[in-house]
Structure formats: C-alpha cells, structure tokens
Length: 82
Image (cartoon, one colour):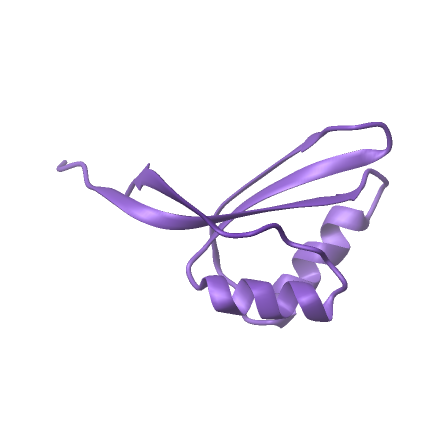
C-alpha cells in the first residue's frame, strides 16, 4: 500500500475536565456538520483537558465550536499520513 503524506489543519482547545464535557463538545461539532479526521484528548492543567482536532473542513470546525462556546486556538498546519 502506497503511503501519502499530506498537509492538514490542526486545532486545539482547552475544556473543563469533567464527565460529559467531551461528549457535549463532540455532539455540538457533529450537529455542526464537522467530520474529524483525527481527535485526541488528554488531561492538562488542573481541572482542564486538551482537545487536539484535525477536521476535514477547518471553517466548519471553527463555526461549530464558536456556536458551542468553545474557544479554539489558531490553526496550525501539520503533516499526516493518509
């Protein structure tokens, strides 16, 4: 199988580290029509968790996040294998 490396947009956001918060955010993104290529999350500072997201459409992610009250950091361009 041939490997392909592509440039993608990466966004990060800090959320409250409590039960159900990740589901609330992901539900809002789904409702906004966001399709994620990749997502990973981990605890960070006291009481916070970090979401790392690679969406198919960055503008859709930013719009849906804003509607959900989620502050998303600026876009980073990264490389990934597809």
